[in-house]
Image: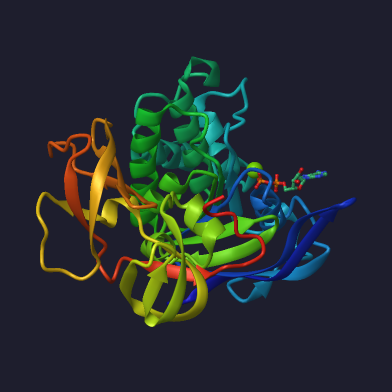
Length: 353
Ligand code: ADP
Ligand code: MG
């Protein structure tokens, strides 16, 4: 795949805060990459450097082989959509959308026909004469998208574009953005603090903590093979067990031995995602089959969350809602050997505390 955007060694400090440190990242042409991380980890600072609103202290920004550091924002061929679209309140929707073309000297007839076309792509046919004050939050964000796409930028940056919307609308907008990407082939870098949003939208996720990139990988890999405990927890991990690893045999603190596919040595945290544990009412012939007792059972609508206890081992299991497990029932939990994963214990590890 062709490399489109390349961030090399980017660092940005504000007084005593290092907002972004030594960041290296490449985004492929036509890719949607999510920049994910908790609030304050440096996501917006990174986008603002790419867009040209902030100047990096060190490092370079390369788009299509051209270094952008000295290029002013308006000449970068990059569009930025923010959490709230900041439309011009006195202009109509159609004029807002066509604004970028007007700045580029495109005549009125062409502007209006292009604006009409792109408004239909964001499902706002017939809205051209409204004022921004007459739009819902979701409609305003669609206008903001249309306004960015009409200038056919090489790169679309989205900074928490959906976080001001309610959950149902957010899903619709995710679909819409994915469809727009498929239609236009534009490269997108989407900032979010919401791991589920990153997973739905992106082909790859770049996870950031404290100004530094921690792991860049497809969503499946970030879930199943997190590089460390903080990553695992951020991606919704809940099962963490201390163990002593000898190759693919890992001995837990309660002497239970797990078999894995991933060889490791020494003291490790073992993790498995709660939805990957399988449970059975009777013993089955499988590796990593552990007898346990159901200690909590919560129906969550689309899933059922169980806590299983096996001696001093506690397992969180998320299963389908229909199965009828009950408290104090004896069950057999299977931890599939390709689903158990581990990483070394480090000084900053907090699991199990
Ligand atoms: P995110 O978008 O991931 O929430 P930001 O990039 O906005 O994080 O901020 C990263 C860090 O830099 C935070 O500690 C924030 O307080 C700090 N920061 C951001 N912008 C400024 C600024 N203009 N002046 C001082 N500190 C800033
Ligand atoms: Mg931000």
